[in-house]
Length: 187
Image (cartoon, rainbow, N blue to C red; front, side, top):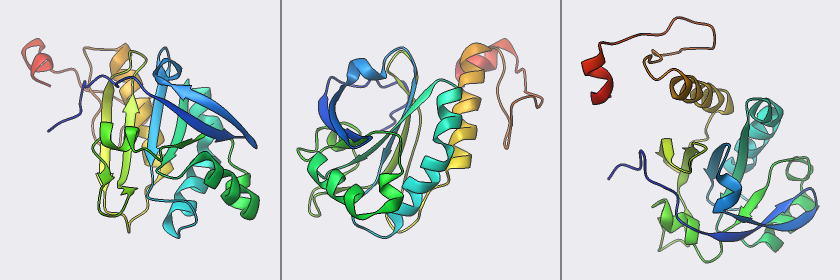
């Protein structure tokens, strides 16, 4: 089943950000680009490398109008405990969403029921609240924030210039493709 163009359902979860707790809902995703970055669990091995990589790129995401949300099935209290014990996690500026009831993990079909954890899933949400890009990979392989950033930029470009498509390795300012009108609808 594809998630492309699937609208994000209603949700309300607690977040940990800048040493504070707050609520995040579907309304927070609307009106801007968003990335939901699911990772298996706090206090693990690959996850902090990904979260740090994303943290190092966070200001660039913000500059292009995209909010980043890290998501795990841990509680917001566990997120805080991890930040209290890890300089890497404490330095993160983007919100870590708590999904202990698995509402988000199930909504995006990344929940591993027998483990009580989520898969490594990345979902790019457009300002209308629809999924326009996603990737789910094995839990033992980390993701790359530079490639995720490039994908968000390409999706933003295509959203603004609907008659053009971005080829492989496209970067802002590079040439795009302009398929025939008949092909655009099929893409």
